[in-house]
Length: 96
Figure 1 (cartoon, rainbow, N blue to C red):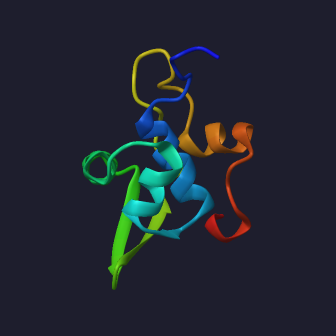
Figure 2 (figure 1 turned 90 degrees about the vertical axis):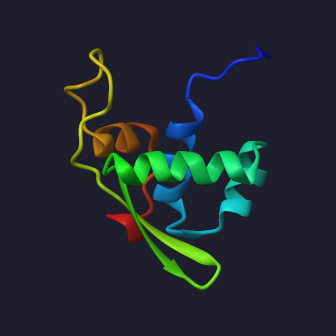
């Protein structure tokens, strides 16, 4: 196995929250093997950029992925987030 990933932690968190709209930062960190602090920083990045909307409910956040935004970067700017999630077949029926 290579020591690198095709999907960055930002992309992986976007995929996770598209599959599980109600999830804690701790659960995300356990799935990805990164710290909870790193998850919170990435979630803040995604929220600030408009890729997700989060609503706090107790200890759990509810996430909505903005599937209309283009992917960041010059190479993928013509592909919407939702198109990538569809290709990866990660969207849950409740997130659509």
